[in-house]
Each structure stands twice: as structure tokens, then as C-alpha cells.
Length: 499
Image (tube, rainbow, N blue to C red; front, side, top):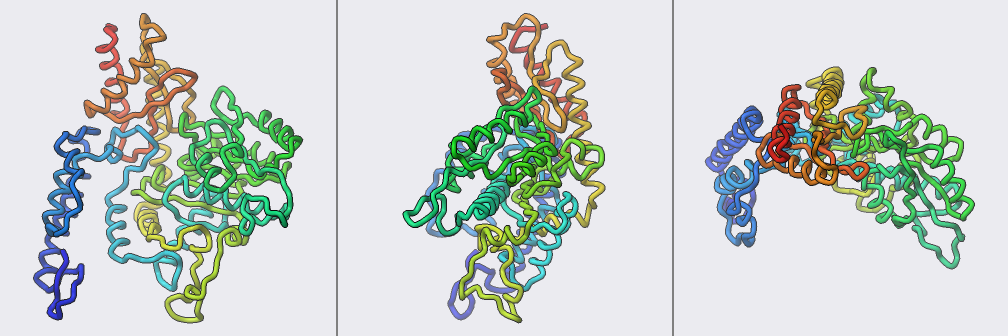
């Protein structure tokens, strides 16, 4: 909606009062349409496939001349709005994704309208982020910790691992900020730095190992027990063997809520081990960390508050719109030392816009950062912590209801314990050969999605294909879990010929 004011110079704002009025009307329609979309989710399918004509429309070349804001919005309504991945829907259980909220949506609009730059600066948005980080650090048992809001759990935990590498290497006389992971002719010789996590650790760890120059070989995978938790005895043995081989262990990752099954490692035992072995203890709590907020669920993540660093998402079990995750580092000084840089054009002044400096830029790798904190700040104030905790506990109770239905059925089989909000099961009636169960259950999963009944995901546990339900859905009701189970049974019987 580029306009030309009277002086002939261009702007992307409306050019006059009439233009602003027209845009205001379009903006009001956008808000009304999105509220209408959210308020009728139960009347919509959980997911729908895009028609070929819609899919092919995204192959068009970039336009040389604009079509105007109203026409662009019409394209959104026609070709985008009806075809999301379904994560807003009450029966979305496919991956650990947030569902967003109406207030979060509007907070995103407010943040975009303000367009604050969150490297720091002398501005109210920076105080909002500082306050949110103080709240989160206190709530998760790490008062006084340094923190940063980032895009997602991968970035949060990657930054935590980067701080761990810097801190533990510095203790050994290795300056990773100057020398990196390379051996220089005039530098100290040292063995490879390595870190540890269970075989159930999320894929961020491999990406982080590669990005930080540690290499995938430096990510040491530890076996798990029958409940998919890290085997602490095996980890202890691996540490001794690796040190004897000249490797330098620097960090152990504990997981609060694994992706596959929702299992949580014995974080207290890992914290004890890290204290004995002088290792950094990082907790990947992408969704499970927020169980710590509940008195009833906190024992399942006991030990989390002893972490040296913690990564978790607010757009998962905090229900906020994407993107909003957090990394906390217990020692603020080492957090800053791992990333802080200086430049004359970013120098802090005693007064003015940059008074107070750029503290958030000194806690990670991004200088340009958006105003992620506003949706968290507004939502926590509007709804309160007690409601958030009640919703988290509600998801766990709903998942236990699902598990009870699976265990009560002769045709369904639970494939892993479900300690929190993730359940893995399959359709396995008598008379269907074992070799046929994997393709049968994969087809059940696809038809559940394609028929718009519900959106679970799939995984493989011990060679068995599982229908995986990850319930971080504030819109879900028990009836939605029942609809999912009923759909599995109906489609399974239809495909297998079971009575």
C-alpha cells in the first residue's frame, strides 16, 4: 500500500487521512476474521489437505507491481488461512507445539506495531523483557539467573551449551572465543571436548555440536533404561572411559520431558554426578520444565533447579504463539563473558536512547531481536500463574484418561510409560500378524489426519510404530481424546477387517 505524499516521495504508510481510514477498516476486518477463525475451531476439521490449485499458486513469480493491501489480504483468506498444520485445533496432539491464544495474537500485533528493537536500549520494552526473565528465573528455582528470550528450544539449549563449552574450557586454560575449537601452533594442546546426553535427547544437540565445532562425534549418546530415561550408571562408566582415552568431558544434558515419550531423566542424580565430576549441567526442558510450576508435577522434574543452564519454550506448555523460548544461565557473569562484544557505534551513553547499553545482545548471538516478551508479560498478567498451572495439570489428567482407555481396550496397546502428557500406543487386535502392525498403524495415523478427525503424530519405539499423542493443548477436552481413540478403533477395524 505504497503511497505518494504531496512532495512526491514514497512511503509505505497510507498517504492521507482517507488512506488511513481505508486501512483502519481493513485492519478491523482482519481482527474480526481471525477472532471468527479462533472462535469456530471446533466446527473445523483438525487438518485439511491443500487442493492442487492452491498449492500451485505459490509457484508464481514475485510481482513487479503491487495489488494493494486489500487484494493481498484476500489471497491470505483464500489460500493460507484454511490450510495451517492444525496446531490451533482442540484435537491437535501431533507434536509438542503451542496453540496460541487470542490475547497472545493481539500482543503480537501490538509488538509488531511498536516494532521495538530488543538488543536493549533505554525503553519500556526492555524493562518488560527484564521483568519476564526475572519472573521465569524465580518460578523455575533459579532466582538471580541471567536469561534471554529466543526463537525456540533449539536456540535456547544451543546457547546453553555454548556457555557450557566456554566456561568449562576456560577452566582448562582454553579460550574458545579466541581460538575456537582449533589447535593453533602457538596454543595449548588438548584433547577433544565432549558432552553427554541420552539417546532420547532432542535433535538440537547434534545440530549444536556441529555448529559449535564440537562435531557430532563429540556428542556422546548414553543408553536409556526401560522407561527411556538416561542410564546414570552407564553415563558414569562412559565418563571414566572417555577421560582415560584423552577426551575432555565438559557438559551433561538432562531432559525434562523427552520428545518421544515424555520421560524425564533423573535430574537430581545427574546434578549429583555433575557436581562430583565438575561438569556443567544443562537441562533441556523444552516442554517439561514448566511441570516444575505445579506442586503435584514437580517431583517428576526434581533436580531441575540445580541446573547450570536451562532451555525451555513458552510456546509449548506455556500456550503462547510462536516464537517464545527462554534460556536461563545460573551465573550471569559467565553468561555475559561467553557472548559480550563491543563496538564504537553501540557504545553505551550516560543518557539518551542507548543508556543502559544492550544487555540482551550480550547474552546471545543476535543483535536484532523482536519484542517476544510482550505476549508473555500480558498473558501472565491477564490469566495469572494459577490458571497456567491448572491447564498444565489438566493436560496431564487428560493424557491419563487416554492411557486408561488404551489399557482398557483389548485392541489397543500402550508402548511406553506416560509419566506426563505424552502417550504412545498402537492398534494391535488379536489375529493381526506382528509384521502387519507397523504399516497398519501408520495408515491409521494418516487417515486420522486426512479425515480431519485429529492430528496425532507417529514414532517408532523398539521397532514398533506408535501413534503418538503429545497434549500441550489448552483447548482440548476429554471428549477430544475420546474422539481420537474412537477414530483409531474405527479406522483400525475398517482397515484390518477386525470385528
